[in-house]
Length: 340
Image (spheres, rainbow, N blue to C red):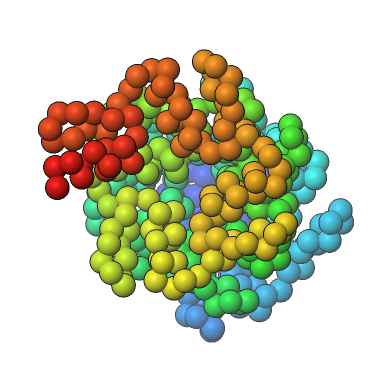
C-alpha cells in the first residue's frame, strides 16, 4: 500500500500523497480505510490519529497545558495558543488575493473568499439550505434537532453553539476583550467589534440577492432574507409564536421568564434585550451615533434615524387596506382605529 522514495519520503499508493516518515503515512492511509483505532473510554468516540485522540481527551480532563506568556491565558491545544497570540501581536499572515484583506487565521481567509465566489459547499439534508462554512451548517442543523450541547457552568444555561456559550459567559465576568482601535469602545464578542467597525468605515459588505439591500453584518442579511421568504424558523415552546430572527426569539422568551440579564453598570437598570441596554446607555453618555446625511441631525437609535430620513425621502412604507400610506407603523395603527 505504500512505497519508500528515498530521503525518508513515503508515498501513498492510493492517492499518491508523499509523507516524510512511515508513521505519518500509516496515519494518512486511515483516511482511505476509515480505520479509527483510538477509542475514548469516556464517551466512546473513535479517532484515526493519536494526536487528535490526545486533544479530544483534554475535553474531558479540562487540561490546558499551553499558556500565553503575555496574558497568562491557557489552552488545550497548541494551535489555539498560536491563534490567540495574534490578538496581542496583531499579526495577520493570510491575505486575500482578490481584495487584499488580511486575516490572522487561514480558516477565516477561506471563509472570506466565499464572499467573492458566492460558493456555499455545505448543504443541510433536512431543508436543503446551503452554507459557506461547515460550522454554520452544524449550528443550523441544531435548529432541526434542538440540540444544545454547550452548557454554562455558572448558571446552567445551554447553547447550540460554542461561540454563543463563550459570549454568554462574559455576562457573568463582565469581560470585554475586543477593542475598537478608532474609538476605544470594547465588546464581549469579536463579531460585535467587526460589525461596530462598519459604523466608522460605512462599509456594508453583505448584499441581498433579491432586493439589493446591503448590510454591515451577515446575521442582519440572514434575518432580512426571511422578509422575502416569509420563513420563521424559531418557535416559542411556551406560546407557539414564531420568529424570523434568533435574537427576536431569544428576547421574546424573556417575556415568559421575566428574565432581564443585561444590566446597566451606571444606574443598575436591567433589560431583557442587549440592544435595549445599548440604547439606554446613551442616556448616560449623551452619545448619538446615527447621523442623517441630508440635514446632519443625530440620533441615539438607528430606527429613529430611519424614521427621520423618511421626512426627506417622502417614503411611506406602511399601507392601509383603504389605500392610505404612512411613514411609520404607529401612525398606521392609529389610523386603523377609524375603520374599527
